Image 1 (cartoon, helix red, strand yellow):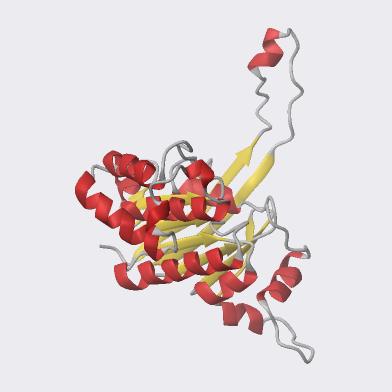
Image 2: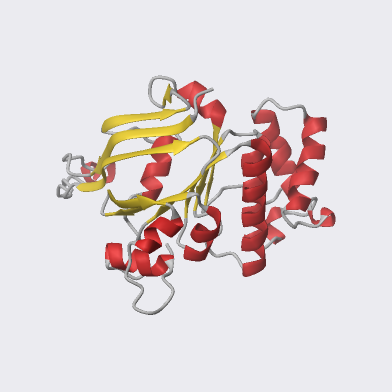
Length: 273
């Protein structure tokens, strides 16, 4: 298998500006004014090595989630090329989907069902044996800090943090070799963040999983990521190891943090989505 887990070459994505009109506007007999085009990604190029945890940092609206959606085949680029382990995301979509899984901050579930029922349903979609999947589900959920007695309770009765852990477990059920984590710990309490971060480290180390991570948590990025790209207004403005990025900023007598780097490169305060 190729050592390059992810190769993105001059990926560009623009929204709006096409003169499209809403159906509702037509029904009401009036046209919607053309929206100004918004360039979400502008000639983005990067390479992620196999087994690497690669972070994407950027302010709100910088293009982080759009980039993840392009890699996950949920969107297609207007221009450029994206390859996952050598497979083109547009021409070989089915092959790419078998290699990846994605966790987003707004993961959807059947809330009336339990974590076990939701994950058994997902396992069947992945073509997994239900009995074997049940054992794996218990192992993953307990490793993430969910007590075994809670695995059969309705998901709607669980906290936001617990539901996000179930989303992490669902993503890992299919044993992806590229795991896309789009702000997976946003809104979680410190303990839940630590549980998720420890699990990410474990699957990367034990299963040679490559991880693409977007986050607003500078401490998380500093501790987890092998390399980081800072993106602003759809363009990569810097890419290096956490230590390499911090070395670019004058310390003025104090220890430089990734938040200092973020502020210096984007001129923006860090804010959660």
